[in-house]
Image 1 (cartoon, rainbow over the protein chains, first blue to last red):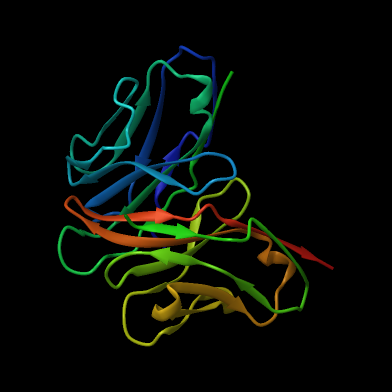
Image 2: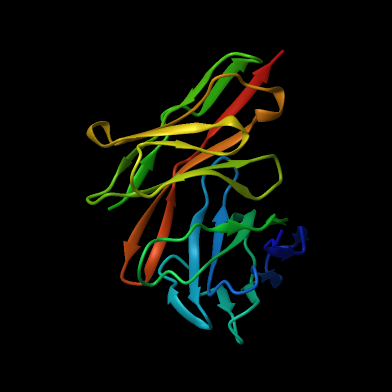
Length: 117
Length: 115
């Protein structure tokens, strides 16, 4: 069964350092999402890609966060510099093309647990 | 704006007892509705979804949910809970934005199962 892959699974970094997360979606899934989940909360969308294009990054703190999906397949989310408040689970999800027609379900990866000290 | 409310932060159920987790949504049109489960330190697994049609939907692991438009609810049920069902449960609504579909999640309900 195809799965969304994420790495690393856990990351501990000091504040002001740079950190990057990687996601490989299910093959053939055109839409890729990055979510942030603070402990005790539901996931919140940070950025959404359709192929290699960003279609929604309204909730991405662009002064320190960046995301790319250069070839429309795997994606990287970067934080520079990291702050204490960035400690959270970062989840990647993918779905079939969804700009038109019915919504398609999202499949989630195992997440990256970030701790900023 | 679309939103999801899960009124119960924590629920404790005895193994073998029935379960109902509440979910209320706010959305102008017919929503796409989902229930996800998350075990500690893991990603989210889809339990079931409602897109249209029969308002009672069956999911994996013996779960079901009923869409009630008049009550703006999509409650999750299971007739007999197993210890392995202990986890965090999230209700989500999918809404069509200019940029495509997006999921809005509730804050989750933590389920504890006692012997």
